[in-house]
Image (cartoon, rainbow, N blue to C red):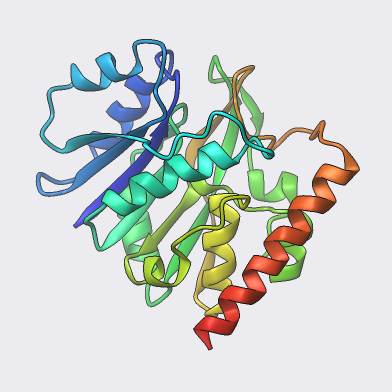
Length: 242
C-alpha cells in the first residue's frame, strides 16, 4: 500500500494540479493523506471537491502560532500527515509541485532494499517555465551526514521511504526540517539511495516556504543555531539506535 503525505497551507492556486498528477498514479487501495495547517483560502474546499475516498484530510492540531524557526510549522504539519499514514511505502509531497507520470512506478522499481530514496527534480517557476533542469546538479546533492547538516541538499518533495524508517525517525525534533531529518536517519542506517532521475517539477514562487534552489536570507546566527541543534538531536537519536 502507498501513502502520499501532503502538508497544505493556503495552496488553492496549485493543489488541484498536484493532486491530479498524483491520483492517476496510485491504486484503489492507496491513500493520500492531507494535513492542513488551518488554511485561510479554498485549499480544503478544492481537496474535498475531488470526492475521492483515497483522500483523507486531517488538521494539524500541533499548529504553532509563534515559532523561532519558520520551518517548525512545516515539520509539524508533515509529521502529522506521516503519523496518519497506513502505507508500506510513503511518499512526501509539497502542495505546489507536479509529479511526472512515471514517478510511482520508478520509485517502486528503484528503492530496492533501501529504507529511503531521494530522486532528482526539474525546478520551474509558477508558470511551469524551467529554471534548472536538475536540482541535484544545481545544489550539488550528495550523501553525507555532516555535509548535509552544514548545507542540506535534500528535498522532502523528492523523498519516499519504507514504513520501517518511521520507527527510527519519529518523533521529529521540533526545530529540525523534516526532510533533512529523515534523510539523516536513513543515511545513518546506510540505507539511503539517491536517484538522478527528475520525477517532479519542483515549483518556486513568491509564496514558497522553503529556501531550496534560492539564496537564503537568514542571518548567520540563525543558520548556526539550527545546525547545532540538529547535530545535537541527531547524536542523541543515534545513541538510541545503536
